[in-house]
Structure formats: C-alpha cells, structure tokens
Image (cartoon, rainbow, N blue to C red; front, side):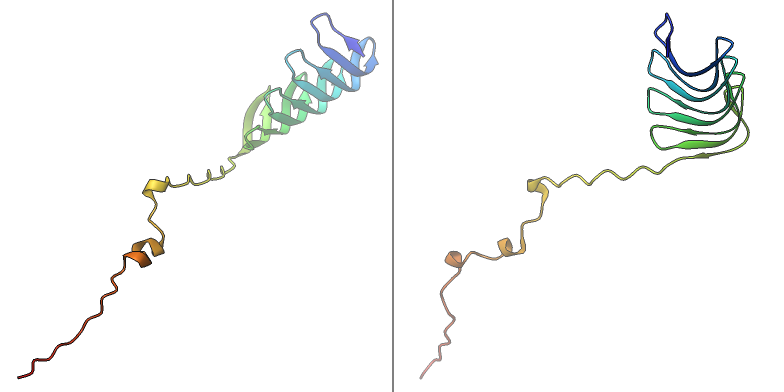
Length: 138
C-alpha cells in the first residue's frame, strides 16, 4: 500500500514505480476507484464509487470514462451507454426510477366521520313511549 502526501491511498500492482494492473485508489474526499491501471492511469474495466452513493462501472481510457459504462445514481436512476472523456456521448438510455408514493397521511380525528353506531341515539336517550290508539266512543 502507498499513502500519498495528500492522504490518498493506492493498493495494488505496480510496474516501473507506477500503478499497473489491478488496484484500488481511495481519494481523500471518500471516492474510491477499483479496477485496471496502466502506467498510473485508469485503463480498462473499473468501478468508481462516489462518496455521495453514486457508482460508475465501465470502460476507462487514459484516466477517463470512455466506451460503454453504467452510472448508477444514489436515487436509483441510471444511465447506460457510451462515454467519451468522462461525459455521456452517443447512444445511451437514461432510466428514471419511479418514486414510491408516500404513505397517506392519517386523517385528523376531528375530520373523520363518526362510527355508524354514533348516529343512533344511545339506549338511555331513547324514548320509552309507545303509541296508543284511542277510539272515540259515543
């Protein structure tokens, strides 16, 4: 492992005192590249994990994303397609993930309709009178 003066760390293979072959570079701000290196540059297949939760997986050339790659965003959106010099370029598809609907807010008690039984008079308040028929006699 090599710890650079600026705090970055490289773990992996070397050739002529340069990162070469498979290796991992951890940046001071939390990003991390895991993949192929040629003469101290990202070259070949690799994954770059961003501190914010995004992740790029794909082809690298001359220290830049170039070729086919997938950028997966922390919010589950993603771009799959061609890249040139760290930029989306040419054919590609951007997929937006539908957000789950937030749970419905409970209705405040005052706004709720009372239960069906509440519409009836309570037993103690019911009238105990019964209707009588009267006939007139004459």
